[in-house]
Length: 486
Image 1: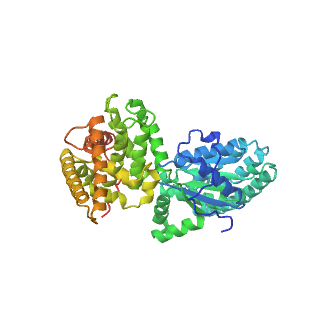
Image 2: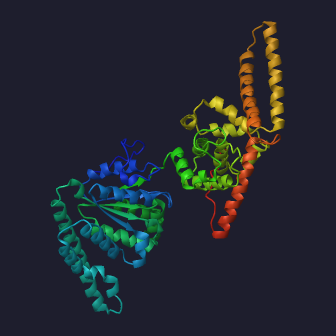
C-alpha cells in the first residue's frame, strides 16, 4: 500500500532528547513517538494503525504522552477511551463528541456553528438507536432511509469541513488530525465492532489518521466470534487496519530500572545507589535483567518478579547484606525454570546442568549484559550454588590435579593432559575463590549454598504475595512460566 511504513522496527532513528511531554518516560517510548511522527507525516490519505500489545503493558501511557507531545507541537489530536465511552452505548456519539470538544472547540476553529449544523443534519443517524423503539414496519423503513441518508450526508459534510479546515492551516503540523482510540481490548465485542464500523464508514476521511490501541489477539477473537472462525476475523481486520504495529518491549535493563523505581524498592533502605557488591541497586537490576533476558520473561512476568523482590527486600533489616545480583538473578530464574531452581540451590541437581541451560539460548544474550567474559562469570555463578559438601569435593579435586600437574613437571615428560588439567585447575580455583569470599564477606550459613539462602527469602516473599493475591482476588492466577528447555 502506498505510504505504508517499513515494518522493520528493530532500529529506530536516534532522537537527541525527549520532549517535555515525555519527562516521566522511563521506558524510552519517546523514540517510538518520533518514529510514528515521521511515518504519519508522509501519509496523505485515510490510514488506520493498530498499536498492539497485551493488556497492561503501557499502551495508554504511550498514547497519553504522545497526545500531549502532538498538542505541545501545535498538532491536532483526539483521544478517545473506548472502554469509558462504552457506558454511553453508542460509539458515534462518543466519536462526534470527542471530535467536537478536542478539535473544533479546543483548536480555535472559527466555524463552530457550521460543525454544529452538520451534527444536526446527521441527527437521524446519530440518534438512530433512540428512534427505533415502538416504530411500525413502515415507519422503520422510513427511519432506515433517513438514517442512511443522514450518514452519507454527515460523511460528505465531514470531508468538506476537514478539507476546508486543513486548507486554512499555514502550519503543516495542523493539517492532519490524529485520532487515538484507546482500550479497545477492554470493550465488549459488540461495542468494539460497532465502533470500528462507525470509524470505517463515517470518520475515516482525508485528513484523519486513526491509531488504535488493542491487543491484536483480542481483536481477532472478537471479530471471529461474529464473522466466523479465524479466517473471517483475519479478513475483516486486514481490510480495516492498514498497519499492524507491535508496541516494542523496552530493554530488560531499562524495564528493571523502571520496576525498581515503580515499586520504590529503595525506600526499604536495604539497597543503596551504586555498585556496592552486596547492597548496590545497580547489581540487583543488572542481575535481574540478565537472567530475565536469558529466560525470555514477558513484561507481566517481570512485573510479578519485582513484586517478590519488593516483599523480600522489605522483610530484610537495613543492616543486612542482601547480595543484590544474586537476588535479582534467582528471582528471574525461578520465574523461568520454576521449582527446579530450588533443587539446584540445595545441590539435588548439579549446577552444571543449569549452566548448560543458560548457555543454550545463545551467547549473544550473555554478551549483551556481562561486564566480564562468560568464562569468568560462569565460575562465580557456580560458586553461588555450592554447598559446603560440594566445596569440599572441589577442594579435593583441586589438590589431586595439583599433585598430578606437579608429577608431570617433575618427570619433564610432555603430556597432552597437562593443558586440560591446568584449565580445569584454573576454573576450580576461580570457583573456590568466589565461594570463600562469599563466606567471608557475606552473611551466609556454613552449610547451605548462598543461592539457597537467598532463595528462602524469595520463597517467603512468594508465599506472602500469593496469599495477598488470593485474599484480594481469589480467581487471579500467576502468569504462565517459561517451560524449561528439554
